[in-house]
Length: 165
Image (cartoon, rainbow, N blue to C red; front, side, top):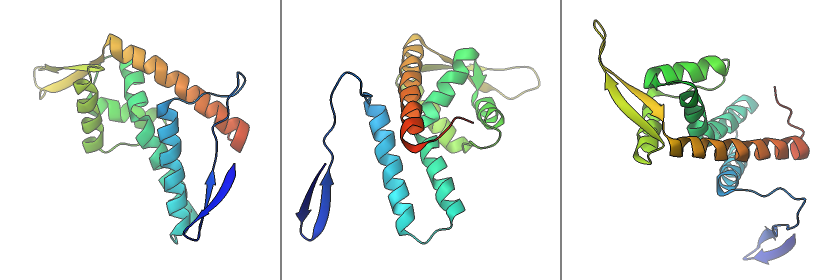
């Protein structure tokens, strides 16, 4: 780490370590880390309560993991959008909730990237629903994200003492 000063502002430059025994970070992990760091720094600058700051950190993690939640559920079975939201909330014990607007925006983005495929289903006495299934490229992305998040969780455990619940 080097310390330089620019226009009266101290700037710390951290050089990325190299070596065979150090964790390698993917762009997903790096983006999530930067986003959460920025969010935490912003929250500490504002006069928020500790609970609000904790919620903001959880919201940041949720934003970075929406694709993983959805792809993991669809890897088990086809679901319609509302059911995906309910499953995420139920399995997380209510700690993770998505608004329907953000959930559907994520589903549309995943469909646009050919990671999921949607189809309309009509059942007697029910309104029509769009069911989603994971594609082969979605399964490949899920495997990559699971590996990325596993390494990220390992780093959190090693560095910050965060233990899985």
